[in-house]
Length: 295
Image (cartoon, rainbow, N blue to C red; front, side, top):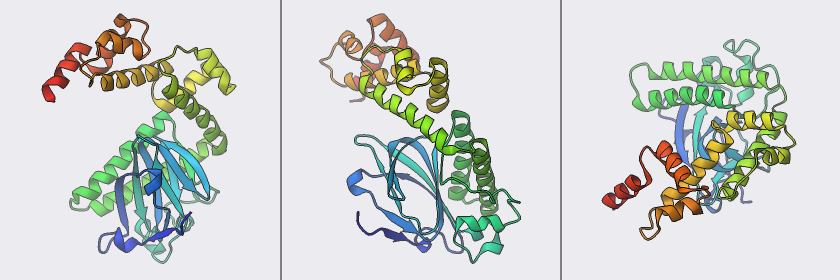
């Protein structure tokens, strides 16, 4: 791996500020940029799938993964082939959160601030895998930060600072909730592996019991963990994959809709019609007609 680049705060922070937030579409593996920086970075995976190189290890990432990248730590994100990966990068120096820390660069220095009152005295993990409910909570907060920072209305820096403090406290609560986050990550890795399997085999029939048995979890626990992670049931996830592929196949005007329904794994046209209409909001014929009108 090439020598890491060093990203300097002067290139990212506005004049007189110690903060920035960037919504970034990560590149392919060939174009990834292994780098460190002279500020703290909180990285949140907003959508897509990809990989994160951190401390020499490659981690698979998806929506709901959150990383604390400390000062002078080298890392890089890159997307999966033929996929997208969107990351919110929250960049700041400790002095942004508390002016008494103006001379510090390290995330751990925040433990010196009265704002966190002992919250940061315990060891923390550099990454979190959020549950479905936590994803909703974090995304709402991050989107508020992003909007305030970019709209630049009066007093926006004070509001952004308050939101960042709230974000850090929520992160610490997550560490408390999962005292051994490595075990939670292991469980989520099992779900991500199941999602990968389903993406590769969505046209085939499957048994929830056999899928759960591969993970060494009970069927009920596997289903609950899958829904918490993906935000939908296994059946809903498979239908989503099938409908997305069906929409792509409809770009070919020479393919019959009945043919598409069978090739995407539906047992019959009726079940395809019902699932498609429910998910897309129009019938397959209406969808194809709309596509033809826009091309």
